[in-house]
Image (cartoon, rainbow, N blue to C red; front, side):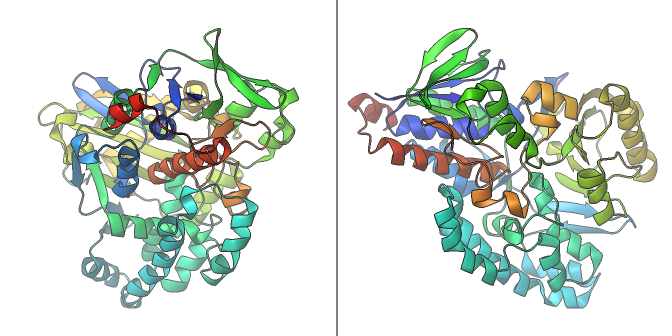
Length: 504
């Protein structure tokens, strides 16, 4: 049997490992941490449970595909809970919008800000459905995206205005700034700026409307645990506390991985590590013709985030499971984060409050929440060792005094912080970028790092920095695209009788 090693057990690595094991390869998944999960890691402390990264399920069909690739059913492993509304968006003036998949309800709320915007809602949805059809239904996001595919897609993309900046397209449909925000902010969920990410990413609102927004009982980490269980059931091997230090290469072909000082031979290596870490830290320079250090560093990398994990012995029903609280500034604040790279005096934030849906995420009557504030990556001149606690205090003060979460500070039982420095050192993310390669026009599709290494035969990549991009659906699709590239390169592999028996 062909042997494959997958480096890193985030969603991309887990999905790739399952798919390849199910295809008949003998797969070993290596993870530097004690537990699997990568960015989807989990904190448990004093009765509170926190998902550290991804916090919602959209496109459950894409998750189902991973289970089905191994002959399994998602329903046997996960308990999905439908959320409605999807989000609550609080604007700076105290008004709010409950973002939902119900068209009539959305139009009624939008009409409070602008009646003509509400009248254009259906036309906007029809438009982004066409982008969704191209990326999801026609499978462009689930296969390697070379320049041949790009030229094939280009006429369609131009007709759909899919290459124009997301915000520029949204403002052609909607006039009120609040409605414009509600339908343009989604690139921020994948580390991009709405003002330069191409409007192909506007398929996300349709993805949500079509497939819903869901939560899994026990938190997003339950998806990690389910994937691990499936992978082990079909014969995969998991090595934790096992950090890769080198991808071994001979004559421009991968031969294996060195981890914890031990050499693991492999015919195929898939890296779910950060793209820049994979090339600059795991592969010697003499094996890299295209992805030299200089070229890797020349790419634009997305923003980072500042995260506060709070266990609070009080509940705040005003917050929904997913809540956005916005500054008055939109475009200039995004510019401060992406271009000026400064820590602005104001901020917008996303709050994940899973206890609104799953009370078991905290002790009775308490609230488990994390607060995510977009901030510049480590190209900014910010000393997070010095700034982390004062910045957290500033955010907590705002929530308590300005937003109206009474007695928040005195009810905090757990407080954990995660900064861009933590993304760099704990997750091996280059310059602390939370998502990786920025999804702007010149770094989308075939202009992103390939699912198949351009330098080394037998080396493949999955995760947020490769095609089609970040977010849970995007990362799972990178695994599907990478699987297709590997199977094309290896040819048809006949499953052994043992793997057939395991998969049934």
